[in-house]
Amino acid sequence: MSGLFSAVGSLWTWLSTIFDPLCGPAGLFTVFTMFSPHTMLACGDAGWGDELAGGLKITIAVSLATLPLGIVIGFFVALAQQSEERSLRLAAGVFTTIFRGLPELLTLFIIYYGLQILLQTLLAKFGYNGPIEINAFAAGMVALAIVFSAYCSEVLVSAFKAIPKGQYEAGDALGFHRARTMRLIIVPQLVRISLPNLGNLWMNLLKDTSYVSIIGLADIIRQTGIAVRVTKAPFTFYSIACLFYLTLAVISSIGLFYLDRWAKQAEVRR
Image (cartoon, rainbow, N blue to C red):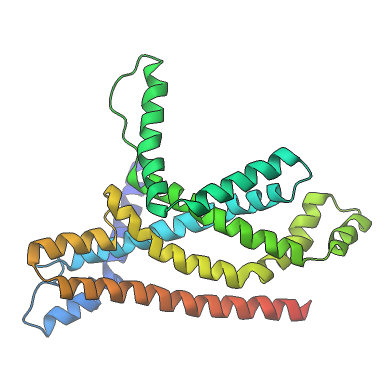
């Protein structure tokens, strides 16, 4: 069985290398260095192409990992804001006020360093006094997801208010449990209504991932900064970082356009 996993891992590594859009055989950096005497963007030991490509992958991975977590947290916070229970509404209001008011960088520091201190304090009570280090990727994902969810909950609350109460009553008339009404009737409308604003939050999330470089995660900004300090070519590498973020923004805009059109077509069919 271990041999099978090893073979699958080797196959995945080979495929990711072959189809790498930056450092693969037909990758952008590979083609560029073939026709240019400059090797700063070459992949491998000769240049910084593979480091920049790795930073791009980290940025994309953080964004994609943060998005679903932030939406799920934001959905439950939005439900709490509309709850008949006063304590839930109060807790949700405090949550959104705090994390919409704090700078994203400060939230990241609180999560990254605060969790380490909290875990060290708890484990010390059980006799463990060794060092505790939180994974930078996990800390960045959680911090960005919390900030994203605070804004997402406000978007979803507005979308909930745009859905007529008769939709809930229709589900009750059909004998649906409230959870089934939410899944089959409310959530599809919620997605359609909130999609444009969630798209804006996604674009902000792509930019906010640059904060994770502060805690040592090798994203686009951190890898670019290292390359600039070594090569003393800031304009070249920061221009490449700009192109990376703009490319992600363009791809996201195209994807959101088709997603929004699909949602509208689905509404028309219904």
